[in-house]
Length: 119
Image (cartoon, rainbow, N blue to C red):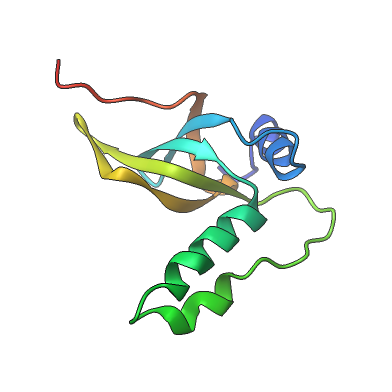
């Protein structure tokens, strides 16, 4: 999208305000379908930093992700927690991952996430 979807920006702003961390969303960005729950950027950064800190090979990168104070600007990115990339009938990774997507790159979206079943 050349101009970010204002409704999607409002959803992200609501998540960022701390009023809700339960919003599930599925988006298409760059031809990839991503589904999961949104998290405030500070919480997302903190969790990524913790995971990297625990890594023997990647600990030196943990500081890059430490939360930073942001001005009162509209969000530019969606921060997914427990998210999966959809490919056919499979969601990767199985346990969910931490993804950051530029709102301007979202070409389609829907409220809710998709679940998988072998039945």
